[in-house]
Amino acid sequence: MTTSTLNTSRSQAIFGAAQGLMPGGVSSPVRAFQSVSGHPIVFDRVKGSYAWDVDGNKYIDYIGSWGPAICGHAHPEVINVLQEVIEKGTSFGAPCALENTLAKMVIDAVPSVEMVRFVNSGTEACMAVLRLMRAYTGRDKVIKFEGCYHGHADMFLVKAGSGVATLGLPDSPGVPRSTTANTLTAPYNGLEAVKALFAENPDAISGVILEPIVGNAGFIQPEPGFLEGLRELTKENGALLIFDEVMTGFRISYGGAQAHFGVIPDLTTMGKVIGGGLPVGAYGGRADIMQMVSPAGPMYQAGTLSGNPLAMAAGIKTLELLKQTGSYDKLAATTEKLITGIKDAAKEVGLPITGGSVSAMFGFFLCEGPVRNFEEAKATDSERFGRLHRAMLERGVYLAPSAFEAGFTSLAHSDTDIDATVSAFRESFAEIV
Ligand SMILES: *Cc1c(COP(=O)(O)O)cnc(C)c1O
Image: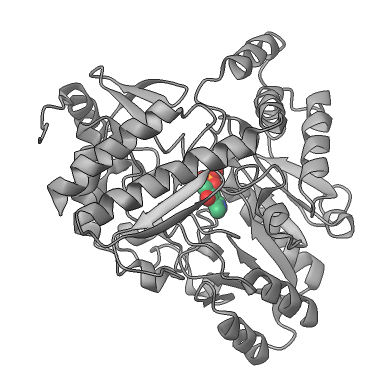
């Protein structure tokens, strides 16, 4: 039954050499597989729902480059448009018409967005939106939730979820206490705690930022009334509501989680999917707030490569593909079939499991649940998850290398892929129980 035959010798050699070249051998920490005590797989190429490593092994991929590959990796139409656009150059440092096209698509799709500014990553979008919240309200404090990740800017590195959590860093050295003194935290789904923070800090809180569905502390959904409650509380207190939709934007629905839940924030950050695999982030929202951004207004924010034609073209094509009739029904059906199969397989061998999915995002915890916040998520058996992760890799399934990450499906994941994945889970659960 056990198939410890996976040969990853070239991956190990390349990763070994990388150790002396880049800190931890990677360009971003979670890729190092530390929280599953394993050796990272070095990729050679990706296509559709699959990834191939440098040893020639093939995997069904449930990370999708952490979100962007929602149409499937290296979609032929995205590749084609990139090849066309690249002939005219990769970056202008001047306005280009493609920015208008993508801006219009984002404004039409996302209910809260009346104007948008493009940047190069989710981190940049979140940094800028925080400055904008403060500029607009004239207040310095911000409320975030334990386990929510808003990029690696100083002010947000407080109880920041997966990447930080799995390294065992409660915070990061190098972040001055004076910087995070203005960052207040509450447990996710803890409306009463937010109410208390507003009461303790009258007229001092610029706004509340959150992942409308959490993907960075494992997959955690908002309880009924939570998002609505935050909308009311922020309004009552003259504060702004910000949805960080870097992960959920164009993944939960074409209008993001805000369209799915019908709760409209003042400002929204985006990333991942809107770049179609190239580096793009964006923030947008009410026009009266966005008019504060330079050069329309006094809040400074800029970017050398922002809005470059290559990235805009990949984003536009990706959104066009997603907009086709039936895309989100297919994503939801695929993902639901997968998570149902996973949960049934765990129950067959008596393993505790809780989990779910919304559209093309899913997750599970190896505990009884329910899991409503990061504290409860930490009750999961992460040592056992590490063994599960290894067992799945050996069976050709590439899951996020941490118990505290969500999983992603794409339009390229077929019924055959899902069936093969569920079979692999059945065998792996039996092995680790
Ligand atoms: C990934 C992510 C970010 C950071 O985006 P980067 O492009 O990695 O800088 C911010 N917020 C959320 C919710 C994310 O998932």
